[in-house]
Length: 227
Image 1 (cartoon, rainbow, N blue to C red):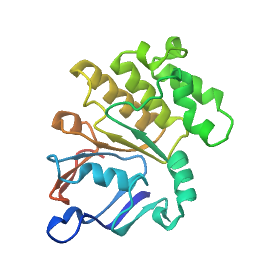
Image 2 (cartoon, helix red, strand yellow):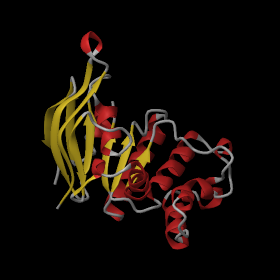
Image 3 (tube, one colour):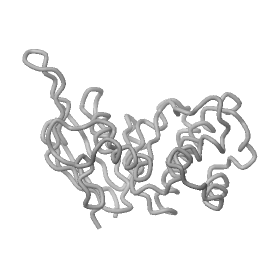
């Protein structure tokens, strides 16, 4: 079943001689539960595309549909709720709140939404991420790999329809990188999360179901690796 659709997306910064076309008429769709890796050189439009898919940055033209809903047909308040509930974001530099412990960082999207924490899901995630014995630790008491695990937990806490990972292993060594990849793949299989990941590492990209290659703001190649 189609869960995500990009329909003729363009993103232009500046104007006239200073115009930069970060995305140039990009269209594709992603099936529910699919794991898609997006690769390409710096400046190819990968991060811009990811931010637009996640409701973080509006396109200049075109539409994004998640579960058939035009996400940019919503007002700013609705869009903020959409980002909290329907999208999980994992960044390269973790973006954890330094004064909050592991448990508080993971449950932050739920608390910001004014909803009760699903304790059963929290415990399941802490176990899955190997953080049960670190739940009361602050970010500066954790290794880089552990901090990224917390970031993944935060992204999964609301059981979002879509998980977007922007260079999730870019700040980690090879051992931690592979551990994070295994966790992302496990969440993809266990929870049926649709996962879209940006990476510069082609070896990591080859672990996805499908690879999209971007060049100059366009999809240059779209290849299914496994079904």
